[in-house]
Length: 361
Image (tube, rainbow, N blue to C red; front, side):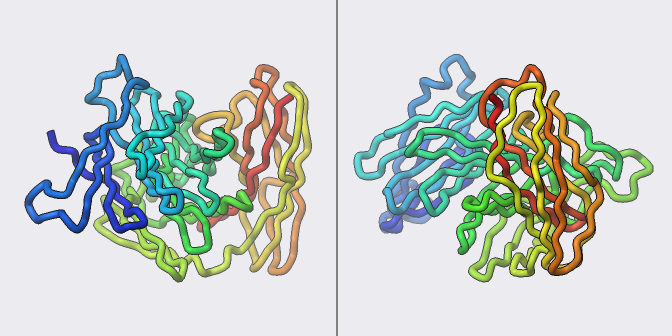
């Protein structure tokens, strides 16, 4: 059957590695031996599928791929469509074998976009939720983050449905080390700083109502179906709007009107509350709304926990700052452990959020 090649990368010697949508393998291409209209120069590297036993193999597919040129590794993901099953594989090029298999939690069952940060961590977009996450190979652990809640503008300006996900899709790294990804059904382009844990999201003006359940009276509704993108050396991001037959440019060299400062970490007992100070700093005049999302639910909602800002609507002048309090109350039945709350502010064009680690004790 056709493999439907979907993602590729080069190793440090200029050899090609790629995966396919209808494949459970890595494909290696010796570029010097590849010949037109033949399979000459290509080798299939089968991945171990024991973790997907009991699942129809037709549902198991490659998700993402990235080559670690320094460590001479290939990272690839497999997932089983709608089966809540995903794995990451670390393939060692020198020894020609899979040296690590990472079983992902069931709520991260759609690992698609993959990229490496400057410290060798693997970042993955989960195209089944509003989650993106970091896998640290040294510590062998996963840290979850979420986008903002899907905008009501997608749904005609009304409230956002509880089932709405933003579906982070592909990830690419900019020249400054920032990680870029497209929010497929969130209709935004996002930039995440893995050092500062800061998320900037840019709203895409194009909207196609055929791709969202839009109320009849809505004048603006839908998404642009942003798919592949690329970041140029000047931090300009070019992206495709699939259903709109357009390509578009985001000028990320322009300064975002606000930045956000929060504590890095807080602790709170189940059923108790904690106050988190959120400081907004204006690089230009800004008016907008406070925003919060968390890793408690796959769509960024807080679940049975609650969060209240001291002010919902905020304005900051250029060069000025403003402190807003966020009171988070942990649900009585919330599992103990570490979560992330994304806190910040945004307007119709752009938002800025910082991640705060929340330890539930």
